[in-house]
Structures are given as C-alpha cells and as structure tokens.
Length: 196
Ligand code: ZN
Image (cartoon, rainbow, N blue to C red; front, side):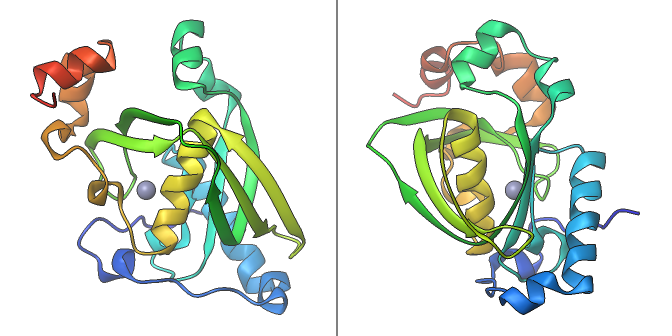
C-alpha cells in the first residue's frame, strides 16, 4: 500500500509541521505511517519524502538512495554530485546546521512538483540532530547529495519548497531539463539561461 503524494498548492505543504513526542514515535500509528512513507518513496521512486507531502503536518521524513538508483549514473556524474548510497533513514524533529560555507548548484526536483526541476543552491555540508524511528537521539554529518536531500526534506517540515530557493530562470519541465541541460556543465547552463 502507498500514499497519495500531494502537489504544490495544497496548504499542508506551506505549514510549519509539529514535532512528535517520543511516545507518539513508538505508537503503532506512527510506526505504520513510517512503513507507508518508505513504500511510497520507493514506489515513486524518490530519494526522500517528508510527512507534509502525504498530507501529514508532522516533523517526520524518510531518506534513502538505493544502489539501483546509483547504478543509473556514471562514475563521473556520481563524483560531480558527490552522490553515494544512503541507507534508509527516518528523520524526526530535526535540527539542521550548516557546516562551513561551501555551496553547490545543481538541478533538483520534488515529488510534490511532479515533472519539474530547477537549479537550487545548497550548502555542501550539514550536521543534523534528530530522533530516529526508535525515538533515539541521533546526529549525523553529511556532504554532497546527502546534504542536499537533508536540506530539501527538512525545508518541507518548515513549509518551504525548492521553488522558494531556486534560480527562477532555470525552472524547467523534467523532460526539457533532460533534453537541454542535464549533460552540460553548470557554468554553461547558467550562461545559456542568462544567470551571469
Ligand atoms: Zn520535495
């Protein structure tokens, strides 16, 4: 069973979501919700899904970058994106801190803006403190694509979408992004789009 993913324009995507208590995290209903979110993310398929995206205004997100997704990309692409396998993570009540001042600009998409993509600048390194699915306090440091996914999903929990942070002139249908921009160096994309 999977859940319906709400699309941009649904008010739930613009709400500050509420924290979960440890007791709630251990409850059968939240444990089942986590399982459904994992299934929904895998079926989409996507590398992250936040509770507001399935209509629940809760500070809960799931993240996973599976070996079969990674296999679709060349070694050069993976190095460029700093992308690697991410085991399944459940991120609850997160606090995100940017580490250092290095940033990266890449095309990014969202399951709640189906069919679209845009250039988004994100910090290369972040640290996140959160509770896991067992209500245990966890901390992690991430860089590259994992850091980008964390920033994207944690934004969702604050009612923020990537379109709030994107280079607006780069907004593109997914098909056109693949056709015209995907294989070009970012500097060339920026120049062609008049992004200086
Ligand atoms: Zn998203």
